[in-house]
Length: 401
Image (cartoon, rainbow, N blue to C red):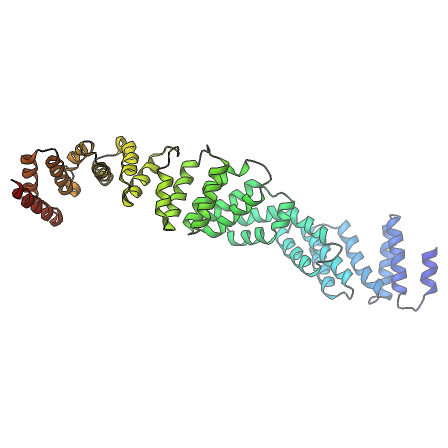
């Protein structure tokens, strides 16, 4: 009775509609839905523009949503949106906008729901309903982003991840989802974006050890996208944390290649020729080539000797030649000789191999064989360089006879 009396006492006052709205709230607390509906109708007819009338407009939609299906939800989305734009009180506009998002959520229109919630968080940053809006965002964002990836809308998916980083972390977004997102960017050659997802995962991992499988794709993508300094940094982080990790060899190679791109070739050579580094034919090959290039012939020979049983004369003549040259320049001519002898059979390496064999024969005191080889080069060489060098050797040897 006190509420009715209040409404009667302030008859004609601007807050008369608000007093009647208080009766609506009382009826709802008593679960008197029909009584509340009648009061709402009365307020909307008698006091449509009052503070009570504006509240009644929102509450009337609430009651319709409770009873209705999809058609009512679609109607509610429009009406809540209208009130969110036009109501005079900020708190009521905040309530209407949030309820518009809820109606979209109930209607399973999650992408539009995210859009409305983003607008809500921007415009009602300090509002009472903001925590509820963020909770709802955290609930639906993973599914929305998954759908974007499935639709190959990769750019928008990444925008969503980065825009709502804190909310997603609070919701502990699926690790598998983030791996799929990063992989999708890598497959699409969106390398910068892929690296940002992997870095996001590394920086925010909460399960010890789970991140070890991220380092190889991360370092690879950092290298391929030209972020060579970061590639070195994360390769070294992996080596510190997982010295026996299964991806150690592959990551070490990317680290070495990144150092080369940074013009730190000696450091790369140190890395590739270090004692105790992972065993790998690919590492041996890169070590042999780089160490030869920086005149570290013993290191080059050691690496290429490990690789030698796997080298094919026809397909790998260039690397066999590097091995032979490394051995020769390491003052191991006897070990180099068999490789040079094999390389005579390959047109591209024959002239150089013949010349080196001649040199070795000369060093071993087998001058007649050396002279024959140099003369053969003068007569038959395809390379003017080796032909000229052979002619000069013949002249020098003739002076010593």
